[in-house]
Image 1 (cartoon, helix red, strand yellow):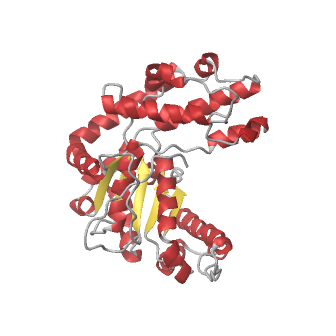
Image 2: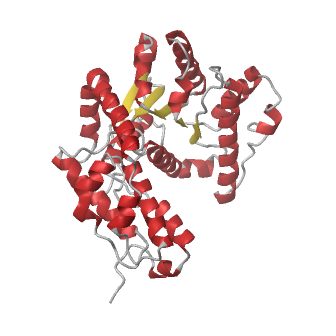
Image 3: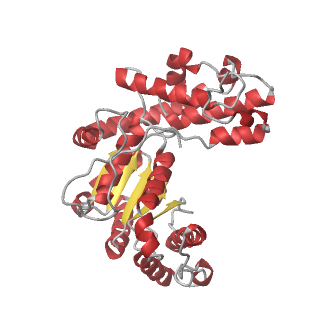
Length: 376
């Protein structure tokens, strides 16, 4: 009998750590992710005067996965251009750090972006067929660590222009705005907008629904920014349930156990207890797999799943924040933007995405954008 699982049968003979690592690295593309990604990419490919994008969603919905997928696609699309311009780094990403004692550390932020560029420069120089990355002098964090914040900012602006950056992705971006008072939040947004304007680099801020506060700070911030929503799946939507079952079925085929479990049979319970968030679902299944491997089990039992479900207090807190954020989205920005996002998704999800043009190039007409729903 042929082995019908999506991984090599030899994986089942590997150690528990290797099998757990395999599943941990699985990412399942899905409808919500694709809609948000399409909206993000079209803002970068067909640029207007938008310089800041806010990507919002509840905890565990998959914002970091979206960020990493977007970075990967932007780098892949720029490979041809980068082969001719070996200094180019079209996209970089960092995670924002909360302010200590209510005071934001600008110099630390600049250095973290420079570190990201420096690491990407080294990585790309080892994989590029024509390694000629003479970038380290510009993005050397060791040299700039002892300099003033103003000098480090100018170095960062120079590095962004030098690398011809299209986008800077900032995860946990609500930490940039966790300051007392609307004036300080407005100052933070003007600061971000200033860097984006000077460098020509669109800043994409991924975070909680707290980022929606930014659209009310000033008319100028509102005009130069746009919101993208990554929502969870809901049990009262037939389309959502169908897509969630497909995601669940894909995950169960990738569980590196001798017998494939039948998670789909309990999809209602899993949808309810994961709160419709794919990130929560993935973490839950990873923990259950860890328990099953420790038990030397041949498959994932419901005992393993129930033992690793999120506690009721944790689910209640996440759900409470999600519902409050979703209500804000519907009341403040949701209706018009959600309609725009939905028009970007092709009706036939089985069709492959149309090839996109070079990142940052203004097109004469609008391309269809999208990603495969396959595992990566």
